[in-house]
Length: 79
Image 1: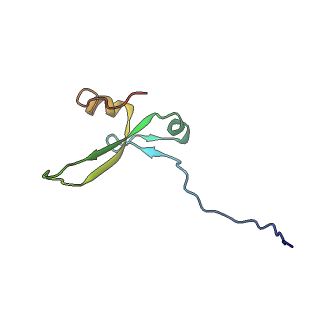
Image 2: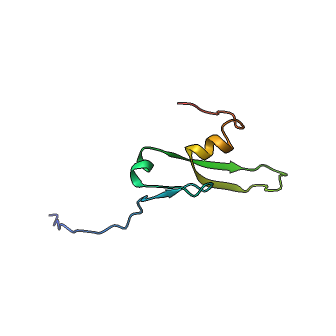
Image 3: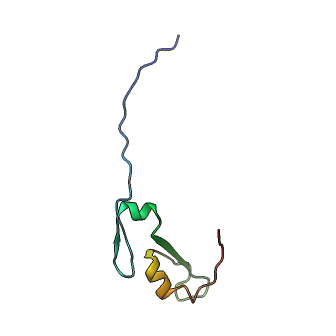
């Protein structure tokens, strides 16, 4: 026979409330975050580089992406 007991457990979770652009410091609220008014930058340096093996990550708004990266980077994937 199996005895079943209902137990209520609390879980701690992390939720994104705001995101700040690491370039201009503009802060986005939860609704903008859900609508993707920002992106994430990941730069990984290769062997022999001054930053050999280092990975840099950050958040960036659409305007800062246009200013700093759009004309300088190649599109690797497009949906």
